[in-house]
Length: 266
Ligand SMILES: [Zn+2]
Image (cartoon, rainbow, N blue to C red; front, side):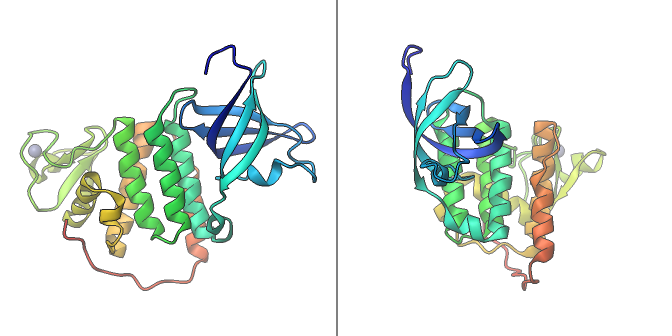
């Protein structure tokens, strides 16, 4: 976009919205070309606004924006995908909110990042279309860490560089990956990483979603990886995340499901 251009078109996903004045909304959106943007949608809270239904949270839309003095202004909006299941299924919504919160933390304002945008759209679609929310979310975390330059080392010990053997390991947030049983046992600020958990993370690092979607994660591995990844992401971001608590609250409301105790062959 040249700085002189008065208007531009972009696809975008709505990450956050705040009410502004009487009828406007301040929105944080993610775009493929311009990165994360803060924009204003005027009059969108009026009952007859033509833009309103196209700018819901997490909606993917085609926008026409006009350059403003401080913030750009949405002049037209047409939703391309509203991900309807996310609006009706609280558990899927909570996982989408978590993915969006993480992405919001990592995305850079006004900096093109197509892979990051693609990852967000794919993740919302997967959550919307019925894939296991836990599996979708763990895969998202692994991919997001790759794109953000924090891919954890899972193939050799971060301390002695010995090749990782098929046994339980330790994981160090500070070192950014696995520590072998020898090195890990001598450190205090480390987590345990089971062989099952290690296999899943490695499998996610090396494969496409299509290749991992059939995986049935056991309840114990799910819990282990959920805690580990949340801890690692919080460490990397140096801030507390809000949405994991939302997921826990929703989970407490859901009927208990029978855990599937199969482990992957990764
Ligand atoms: Zn070691």
